[in-house]
Amino acid sequence: MTLRSGFVSIVGRPNAGKSTLTNRLIGHKVAITSDRPQTTRRLIRGILTTDDAQLIIVDTPGLHRPRTLLGERLNASVREAWSSVDVIGLCLPANEEIGPGDRFIAKEIIALGRTPIVVIVTKADRVNKDQLAQRLSEVGELAEELDCTWAQVVPVSAVSGMNVEVLTELLIALLPEGPLLYPDAEFSDEPLEITVAELIREAMLEGVEDELPHSIAVVIDEMGMREGRPPDRPLMDIRAQLFVERDSQKSIVIGKGGARLKQVGTRARKEIEEIVGTPVYLDIHVKLAKDWQKDPKKLRRLGF
Image (cartoon, rainbow, N blue to C red; front, side, top):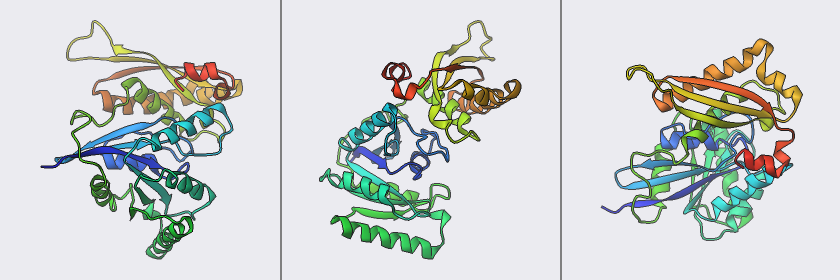
């Protein structure tokens, strides 16, 4: 039996459905999701192992016009990912017209030359058949405009599952022959501390004001099993720091009487417990790191 293995980079502008699609393809939650643009800040590798292939999906931050040093670093990480994968999946939302940002990204990946590009028309569940046909026609026109050929064009819905299996098979067919690159039981190579920090940030992103999502960063200080517990009653202690950029944001994050922070902790704890398989005591402290997105030293401290 011939084995295929390799990397597929999922790219697109912010909020194009990349992380939701990555989670659906892998069958596990490996990337946090939110309606807020630029939710993804790291290269996230999700691993799908089948009987005859191993597909490593690289979910990337949305390429955007940077306004901060963090934005510049995110864009650099995206371009680095493009240059080292076997296939690129370009996400174009079915419910939005192809715009300048989409064209810019398409031109950038076409310039790589050798890498097959699969256009993934995401969020197909949000449009009717006529609208979807119109969007697919525009994808064909984009290829003519940019003088390129797409390896495949696939409309999908990560929510309903429409064409997800078809897309998986098409991506695997484009991978080179080769051995498994990760143990077959793994579905992500993300360190657990990073996953936990991202789940806390995801919980905080729900319902916050427009400027706040970009100002939030989470770092795990301590994580480990509490000593002295009975074997049948294990407990994992997690202590996290949640950073904001301005004093005024601390009150928003904490909420009246600490109500919002408690709500975030409860939501995040449930997600974390599903991953670690044991009860969790989660302790979150809110701290100020003024203008951290523009400060190289603070960015390094926060892992960027």
